[in-house]
Length: 397
Image 1 (cartoon, helix red, strand yellow):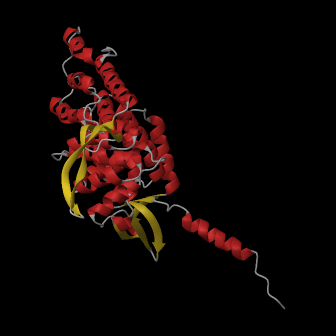
Image 2: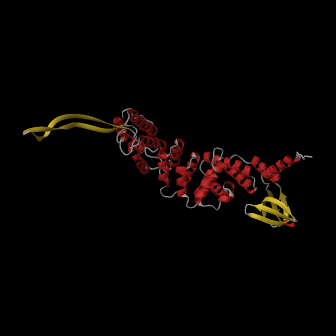
Image 3: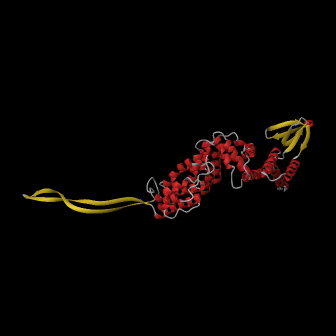
């Protein structure tokens, strides 16, 4: 007789899998001595084993004054949310309360709203600091346990790896805050900003570098406005740099307008337009008439060719005397003299030069809301005669 498997076995296995995959419930336990413990509660032989964020705590049942279960905590938080307004302060308060009650989905929902509101409301330095301190406490929520004691390089990569298309504003802000506070992470953040294949993660690395305020980080972010292959990353890098860019930074970037590579010249002009510093106008005006100069040198891209204009003239260079049957015969030696010109050039296409000029012109238009004209040779005169004069920069370190 062949035994057939019971149909209850797959069902039982599925039920066990669902129960093990379900999120752990977190209850609130209030003790007679005034302590409040929040975590997963398991009853064991007259004692309660409470798994909190700080570890496992055992308490006797007679020491417990009140136990509030998970569902009641959610109802209490929902009541607080109904009574609160939609300000950044109120949403941060709710996120803090949800975090204390181990209600993680609710915490992220309120934190997303708080971060979004902080970006749209007038700057409140006190609230910003309070939010930053709360975000710095969320390492257990954004970094898996096995990576919390890893090397800085691994921690930085894993934190950035938590950013993807569906990452909310609150989680992204927590990851950024942890990256800003990660000790000695500047080299690893620079490496991620250049080599990470995810544009959003490169942008997050740039944001953290700018906030860390190590000497040279701001220039690194500035260079990204030209060097990164993604237009979205270049635009984001300019937005990150814009609040602190000054005239020295513009001068530092201006060398890109005479770079041998045409693409670098165009991207430098685009970066100036995004940075919005009016000091860049004079550099664009001066570079305009020389938009095609130097593109052939220094590894610039272009079609290389040569042409020769030569004239050949034959002449008798010498004679060899031969003696045959008592007779002397002069054998002439003929050579060829060449004269003329040989040109070896790299051709920069007219279309390429026009592209550079258009980029310079568009950048000037965005910076001063005026058109300098089609002819870059007349831009200097336009700048001298322009009214009103170039406005003073409104940004600076």
